[in-house]
Length: 301
Ligand SMILES: [Zn+2]
Image 1 (cartoon, rainbow, N blue to C red):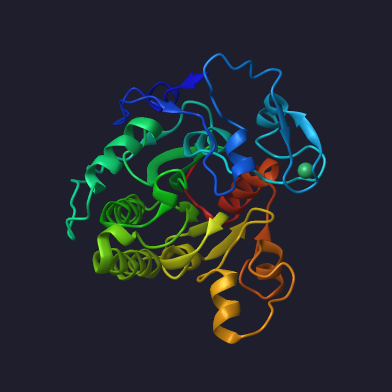
Image 2 (cartoon, rainbow, N blue to C red):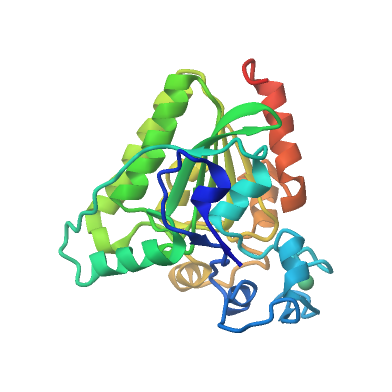
C-alpha cells in the first residue's frame, strides 16, 4: 500500500511526493518488514524476529506498531507512521521550512543521492517537522528518519531542527523530538559538525525561555545527534532496545582495549546509568507523552 504524507496529514502539507510506508533500518531483518516487491502478497509474507527468532505474518507485525508480538522487539518505524501513531487524527501539519540544497565539499553524486532519497521516501530531508495535537495538546514534533542517509545531520537537518525549536519558542509550545541518527553527515564535512552547535544553541534559547523539550531516543541514536540536541531534553525517553551512544561499541573496544559489558549502549543500559529517564514501549508512547504534557503545559486543550 502506498501512503502519501500529504494526504495523511494536511491540505497545507508542503510535501507533495508520496511517502511510502517502508521501514528504514539498520538491520536486514528490519528491512524485510515493509519491503514492497512487485506482486508481493503482503498478507501472507512472513517475518522472522531478529531477537526471538519467532516467525509472524508481516502484516500482523505492522498492525502491532512494528513491534514483535512475542518478545516486544521494536522494529524501526517510518517518520510518517510514527506521527500517525502519535497525534490526534487530522491534527498534524508540517512546518514550512524550505532548505536549499548545498554541497559544500562538492561531494561526488551527493545531490543525485539526495534527490533519489527524496523521491523514494517522500521526505525533504532526514528530519520531518510539524505541529500536531497529542490528546488535545498543541505540540511541535520533529521526527528523524534513519531511512534518509541514516538520519545523518547536515545543514538541512540542522536548519529544520533549529526552525522547529524557534517555532516552538515563538508560539510557546512544547516540543518533542524523535531522534534516530547515524551521526553527522560526512558528505558535508565540517559544516555538518557545526550543526551540533547550532541546534544546541537553539535548544538552550528555548530552554531559557521556559519551553518544555521531550527527547525520545529511538534506534539508533548515535554520533553528533546524540552529542547535541538529542540529549538536551528536559525529559529523555527511549524506546526499548534502542542503540544510544556516541561512537559505536567496536570503536570503543578498540580504543580502550577492553571488552564492553553486555547490553552496552542499549536503552536499558543507558537508563541504568542515568542517561535515560524512562523506557517507553511504542504502544505506551502516546499516553506517556500526553501525560507529561498534561503535567507541564498550561496551554493546550
Ligand atoms: Zn521477537
